[in-house]
Image 1 (cartoon, rainbow, N blue to C red):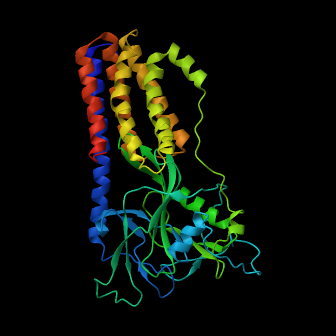
Image 2: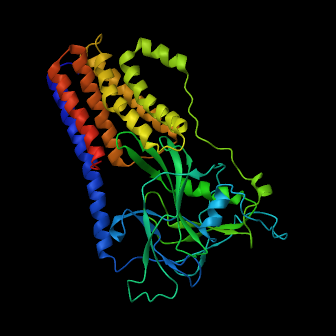
Image 3: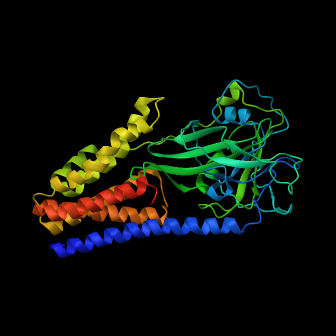
Length: 421
C-alpha cells in the first residue's frame, strides 16, 4: 500500500464497487418491471370473505409497476380501533367475552387465501415488546376494489395512501415501521410491517427485512387481552424482501376494544438503547488515532442523530439529519487525513479502512441489522477504500493521492443521494 500505483489500483476498486452497487440495483429493478409487464393483471385478495379485494403490496406511486413491499398483517377491525389498540389509547370501551381465557390460538391452521384450503402455517414466537408511536415516513400506496365490483370491468378500484404510520424504535437509528391501510368504512385494516435503519449515506431508510417485524407485531397482539386469535394466511405475495407470502391475521374478541384497565396489562418494555465504554474508546483513540477518530465520528453521527431526535421532540427528524450529515460528509474524510500525519502510507491506509470497517459493522450490530442488500455492502466497501486512500495521502502529504481519495469519497456520497445505490 506504499506507492502511487497501489493507490491508483485502490481507486479503481472503488469505481468497480460503486459500479457493481449501481448495477445490482438496476438489474433488480429491471427484472421486476419485466415481471410486472408480463402479468395479466394485479393479484388481488379478500381480507374478509366476499368483501373488498386488496392488492397485497405497497407502491411508491399509484402504479403497480412501482411495487415495494408485501402487506403482511391484517387486523379484522376498523383502522381507528386498531390504532387505539396498538398505541394504548384509552378512549374506547372493552367488553370481554367471559368464555375467552386466552388471547390467541397459536396452533390454529391458516386458510390459504389463494385456493381456499387449510394448511399448517409457518409460525414462530419471539419474546419482544413493542411501544408504538406516530411515525414519519414516505407515502406509500396500495390498491383496493370494493365488494361487488366487476373484476373484468376494470377502473372500479381506488388507490389508498396509508391511514397512519407507527413505529417502535428511533427514526435515525433502527425501528420496526408499520403503515396501515383501509378504505372508508372498512371493517379491516391491512398493514405493511418492516424493519429498517437510517442510512447516513443515502439520507433515507434501508429496509433490512419484513419477516422479523411481522413476527414482533404478531406477538405484540398475542399478548393483548382483547385479542381472540392470531393465525397465518397465505396471501400469495412472497418474494419481496424476506417475505414468504404468509400474512398474520388478527381477530379481536367480539365487540372488543381497549379499556383503561386492560392497558395496564399491555407490553411496553422494549426500546432501543446504545451503550459505549467511553474510557475504552478514549484509550484506543490515543494509541491508534487513524483507526479510532474517523470511526468515532462515524458512530457519533448515529448516536448524535438518535439523541437529537429525542431532544427535538415533535420536530421532523430530518432536521437532525441535516445538522449531522456534514459531519459524515466532511468530518470523516478530514479526520482520515489529519489523523494519519504520523503514520506511513500503508499503515495509515490499513488503520483507517479497518477502523472504519469495524465502525460500520458495529453500527449495524447495535441497530440489530442482520442482513443488507448486496448494493449496500458493495457501497460500504467503496467507502472504506476511499477513506483509506485519503489516509494514505495524508500520511505522505501527497496532494495527488488526497485528490484521488477525495474524488472517490465524493462519488461514494453522491451516488446514494441520487438513488443510484
